[in-house]
Image (tube, rainbow, N blue to C red; front, side):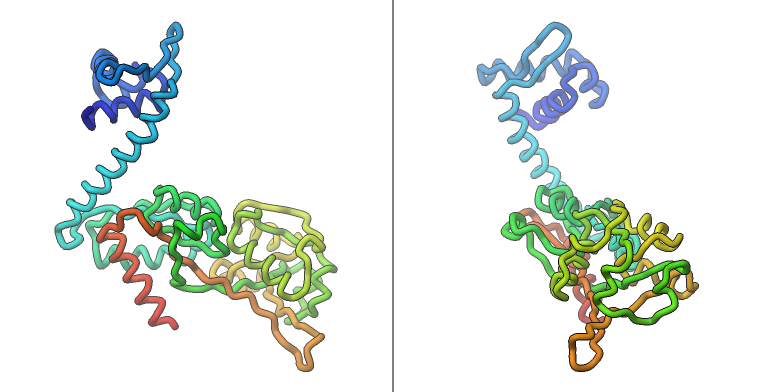
Length: 311
């Protein structure tokens, strides 16, 4: 069993088509067929059912697919490690970031890292916090950067460290009645419509946790829209629809221009007026057991040093 045979097998297993697999690998279709036949003959199993002009993967094929992918992944990590034995002059870093973190907090960090290590290629993908946590757990990303809580089922496999923070503001547009006020009382939260992020969002998780800590059940709020990006939420609120809780980093310009107003929440039940704040930590996530490259560790060190300086 060779690495080349495994790569060919994985291509066929993914596409379920010999010719398309050959085209993707830039080899001939007979070479693909020969590699699969060699594996099947060597181990006395069928990896694919041939049904007319179609193929289906067998149970033996499914077993090999899972194990072969692990082998190829490990080989790629080893290759990356060897390439990095050059004082970080080249290499690759795969980052997954939640939307607000990736759009507003992370670009400065990436720019700072590229100035230190210009030869490093950075592959960054964005998603909601839940997607980034799941992706980091299965090895899609070397590092994940998110806000919000980590699912209990992932805490055993993911190590998390705080590398920054952001404040959530309750914001409204110019046509909203609250725009004329600097502060509102807690019970007034029930007297407006709300625009929210979807449940997988870190910012949404933090807002719901804050509401519960203030004695408010989130389901009691009048939610009129659920949107899957904070940019959409910001645009809708800015146009005059309801209120929302959005990170300070993404509404800073709108607050300066006066197209949004941040209102302070006051708890009247305290003896003196008490402002209620929502501070969301930014978490760096990595898998506890997966291989940690030198590039990855260099980026971590930079994030942790920046966080110490800010603190």
